Image 1 (cartoon, rainbow, N blue to C red):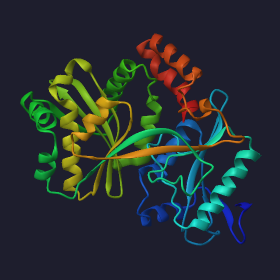
Image 2 (spheres, rainbow, N blue to C red):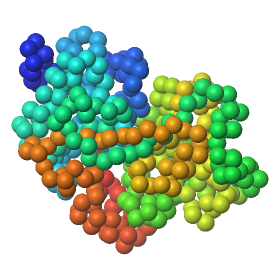
Image 3 (tube, helix red, strand yellow):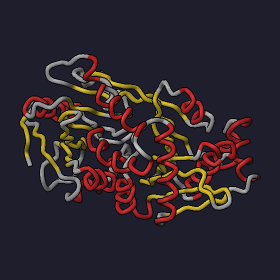
Image 4 (spheres, helix red, strand yellow):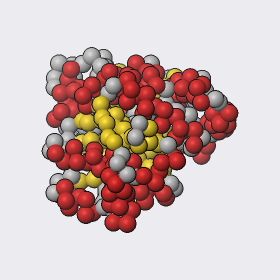
Length: 360
């Protein structure tokens, strides 16, 4: 579908990545495509929250895609109507390489912003694009940690911090922690129980269990739940996603009374070992708030390279600083957090199901 004429001889088309096979073929060719561009991730967003994904491209119908920017329309009475690339994604690089394509696609975004009277358009790029797109303004800064898996496994272990990371991995083995992985219902239950404990501890709404069921259905064998047990008790769990040559650590949860056993270190090291064994190139530790010094230090101690993510927004007309705050951090988000702190444990999943479709 053609959506706008922009510069001379530049036309932008809208592609549905859930039904157009050209998108998946394009991702397999493009070196910057990640798990967050994947059809599996987009399917999960659509099935869980009803978000409609679309790819904006200058490639005409019938031709192999040569560029694309993927977005979802979020329509919320609580947090506003907006276009986001992409909800709940740590990063989502615009897969545009030519200046003319940048200009055409982003000119059409400005038109959509005004025509639909959207609150904003948000991008979550890995590379800095401020110099290309002057109208975009930085909203929030995160740290992204990624570990290069090309060195030998022994070298990867030696790169880890001796007195914390290496010692904690060895501690987990000495404690006799038992490791299980898969996508079974019991593992999902164990993972979700630990996730609820963690989100409650941090006074954050938990993702609904339906989100994780949909992830499992969409990703299949590319998703693994990994759980560490002390005797029969689950103490730590993480969820990883594989796409092309990268394994991504996306979600985790733990029981605080067992933190000293090194369960999270065991699970991450087992994941790195597996990724290395299967010839993957990158282990993605995911994003961290820049001011979360403890989490940033934890990831630094694995020898992972740290880069900066700048989320970007455009508004029409140019808005106040409050409009550029991360979604969910305004007064409505703070109210939701206070409500969550009073929600009973067994009701947290229902609350998460309600609130998350507004947060993306």
